Length: 431
Image (tube, rainbow, N blue to C red; front, side, top):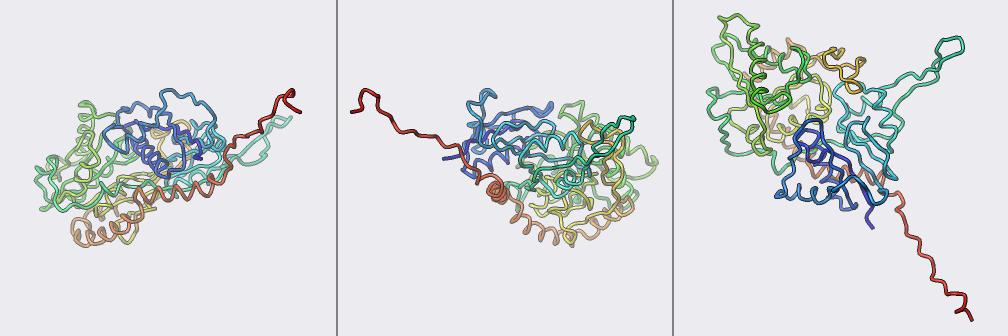
């Protein structure tokens, strides 16, 4: 008899968290060990139109979604795919799945949420250590008004790492690609960067896009041969106003340079793209390298997807992407871990005590020029990366790993057994 599993997750949300939730739910379904019901919840202000009834995987999820959040009975297993301060204890065994944060520490509020659960699952070793290494002093008030330390508050529940698998049926190398958005770009060598441009001052948004653009300009300013940078980004929405804001921020970086300098071109790709379109973008013959100067990643899903197509990578040598980016097959740029700026603080999520990564600007400058000048060498390394990651970090492998985690922590738990009593005869029937 299958165990009853209830899942709370933003499965219909058009967001990174929503995409991760859909993959996880499909993995639970594919394990074929649970009777699954889903409470679909919003993810911020993101649109809730990501599920397509004509897509077989989406249809499986849609068939499990509850019309109302009420449950007829207590689930054997409850899975909460949100941020830890939203975790609830509903099942006999409770699992919290979260991306964690991109910094080196989590809040006490998040630890309290995790300690309500029986098991925590995160997508990377970096994210795991953020929970394991975060500790807070527990104090008590003495009669004389002073405080005395009585212990440390920390994570008390088991935590496992489950990577975010990429769909190997979509993210793969293609022999020939045409994409209207890129075909008309005049340069034959383009760097590509993918990520949301946060609302923070220059150098303080999490993806550090402004700094990346500035160093790209510096690396190729006034050079006879110049590559281009394709920036696939947006702010909070895909609106026209959001697009204009992104263009304005690019021009703000450009204005840091003398007007008589000849700078390379930056092309903005703004708007929603399907997985298939993103794979074409990674495979386009003009796209020669993926680059990010991110301050931190819980996992770094676009980076993994890019490696599955054989695209060379320039990325920081810190945070979640190190689980699948190898230093001998990528250009991993060093730097330093330092305090998160005040503008990025987010109550109970990115806390003032936390730190993230700042890329070494001189070395990142050299990384741009090295990738441009020796691209064939890095293309060969990227092909090796592709062969490795296409075997290790797929959705099927993710499902296998999830099955191992469930077998270790959950599947041996006893199921509720219906007690069957013998049928008794009435007193008057007894001889």
